[in-house]
Image (cartoon, rainbow, N blue to C red):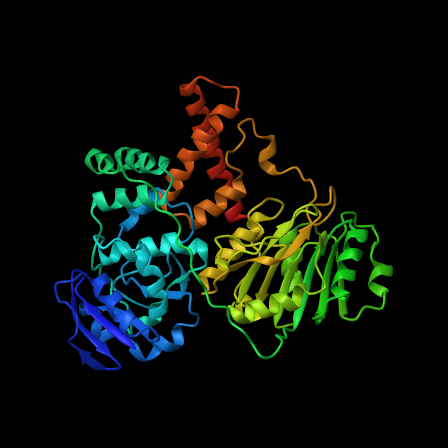
Length: 509
């Protein structure tokens, strides 16, 4: 194990297997020293730590915390971080609001303390600008390589105690340079405008300094494939909410029966809209399947309620959240189990393709969403999670469920293969057209109140303001009102109406 202690500017000391190393250039940058060390010890773990927290470093835990060769863990004790809240003006994902109490997915890697395989740093080294600071480099690596299969985590277990202290902060010039190099060019102008309007900052010099900068390319990784001598075996419960789609469901059950890894059970929640209505699935459920079927009939419509009821019935160690109008290949569950074991995953969502599309193999990545009808999740990760009734009959319940998983410390991975074929049946399923309370308002809310409820719950204040700005600009060319002042006033009314209904939903879901 290589341990590099630094002061944000230069390396102060290096230990290799607890033995001090003196063979490094004290005048070199932190990145240069680390590169030299990884070339010398390519099979070791690499750990970095700011001298100010060296006494709090939980060094004995590192080898257990690092689980995969494509993984980087780090921890920033303070809530501000290197870029502070300013990066939230341009970052739309949920990876910036980082929990300090549990492992959490984020591309914002900290120079305070962290670890990775030395061999991984060697892959990343050719993409590092030697003029960049160590903190800037780590953020750049995370932002550019996460989409190519790098797993990045904030890991509080790296330190014995949490210190509310920020060790280094980016200048405005570094902030603008990072945005220009890692986002589309539009976003540097969004950052300038939002800081001017909401913070009263006229950062014209940092803006001009980005004029000739180009966006950096993503970093492609060569991730070694993990192999297992034994075929993966998972006890899987399949959870299917359904409404008026008996034939689609029959086809999907036939696919499940043909699996090389047969599910333990299938839990079907059949919704019936008419209190006097009868089940359409009696004969289907009575068929001789090679798995157990639990068939529950409810007269309350809504996917959130149906899935929550289904979760109370599952007994398998894993839950496959499935739509009723999907098709899967006979090896789908077996291949999924193998990839889950290889990636030590607790929750995965699968690519959904149409019947005319072909699935394309891509690296496994950390995902910022969740597929409510196309995901496989360990039951142990579901203990504190339920589908929120705030989103019933609307949209966003799956995104909210994904956030609950992340906040409980469960990462969500995305598998491009094996893929699910989604038939997108024209009617039925688990949603039924329903007149919602706000649909009769003279001023229609924008965005939809369920979307606003998600934004209010999970976005930071700068993210909410930028979402509002981008929505304002996006819809201007799509509507008939072309007077910009009148359009702005109308949009403000619609936004306030959406906030009002989102609050109502939160109080009375």
